[in-house]
Length: 169
Length: 214
Image 1 (cartoon, chains in turn red, blue):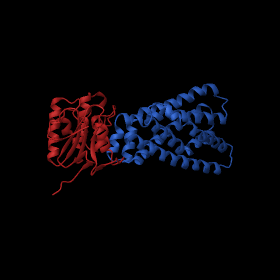
Image 2 (tube, rainbow over the protein chains, first blue to last red):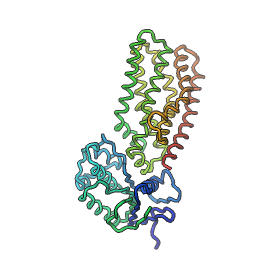
Image 3 (cartoon, chains in turn red, blue):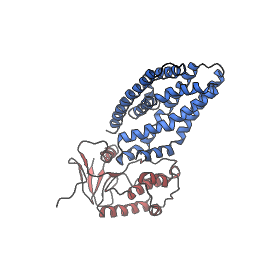
Image 4 (cartoon, each protein chain N blue to C red):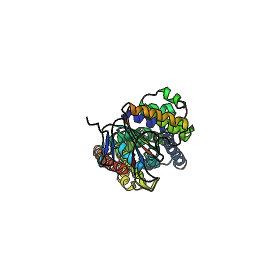
């Protein structure tokens, strides 16, 4: 039986359910551009990019406004909020984004991705600025997501600790 | 989706709306010292139009640039929001969030200038009728800033030549209405201008947005 293809970019990348593709490359090699093009290809179709479903996309910046609280941001993005995720990642729902550290803001973005129900995650340096404890929590969550049939494309500088297929730019 | 984004814009952009109104009021207040008793209808119409355009130019670079800088546009488009739906939300937001409050402050300026109510209403009607043309131009100008290395006011300033016909037409509407001039040809002309600028503005804005994300 042939596997369903979720994302295909010519010969460069093919993403199947339950699979993880990590895009490696030095600064300026085009990792961010590639990921953004895939994530936005529903609205701005790119050459050779085929994507079956909408994707949950986490870029370097992801629409957080300094005056917003964590709760407001998640409610705007998802229409709902599960406080269990906030507790798990040691965040407070009424904390203002402007008062959080880079790492905490990144965790807000990760929580948004975790709570989204999309079958594809596209994550640009998801573990940047995040502390070791939260990194391990996220890797656990990502593993569970992949096991449940989800698929992810991740851009990273460092070797990603979960089994994956690699692409070098 | 449009309503949800609109609500979000109003929640987030409170400060910018406040600055546009404050600028508008301050401007009128300062001028009221100089022309308190002597400002003619033509003078008041001219000042009101300059005031409105200045205030809108002031906010123009900030219509899209902050959303681009903080990743909001990437997020919204990744949610399959279409470019036209985003434009709809932004245009409604500019109208309700900036244009109407600025018109409101123009009414207060009219009171500062000792203008009677009929004059104020006639002067305000000009920009109100030409609102679609004005807003679409401001909208296109703000998208120009996204596609240029030059930031701030430089790109919206390029839109000034396109404003001149609106400006002249708008002031004549305000004055002719007050003089009980048969207004239907003028108003029809204004609607024609709205449609022309509206269609051109949407096409050009869409091109600029797609160009940016290509």
